[in-house]
Length: 255
Image (tube, rainbow, N blue to C red; front, side):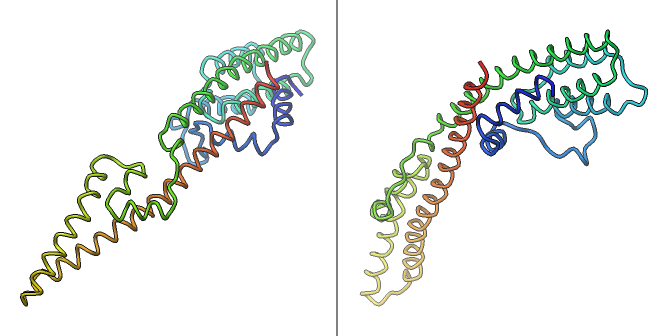
């Protein structure tokens, strides 16, 4: 087992495989299935993995110096924002391991140097990856919804009844103003309808009924939005928790 592989296994043992995989999925990732995509459509990390795979499948073999150049290319181009960045180094690590089998003494010495180079590059990329995780955490925590406190159903109904429920939710000014005007406009139309009814004119009954329906739909809409916001906040909290646990495991294992 080469150096990068050993370190990744150490990290996995330290923070737990489930936490590790959950956090990897939470990191900014553009990693998609490559089965139906051409090389020109692949992300930079997928292109690097494809290149490593081509080295491994080369029937005529490859020069050790070419392998060293490949490791340099990986370090210069790997995207540590993507969740598959360490797979690039791990694949290169496996390629180096396989190349060591039956290698001459001179090649073996150079392969060990390449192995160390790949490991050093991995550690530098890992440092950048940790910075990316912190930036991702900050991005979540800077979102307004992360700090939003969900109102109780009774409180939301009370304020929504008077057209001020949006103050308890994350809504734009236009929605807040519109919601404030709705109950008063509805009330005005209902009052007008009742006044005309007393004089035998029922022309505004339908309008008053529609206004009353809009009023209650507004209240129901606030409860639907509250539920959606609660789910979104929990997603953000879960993402931050997973990333923080992942980051703690990394800094505990790798200095």
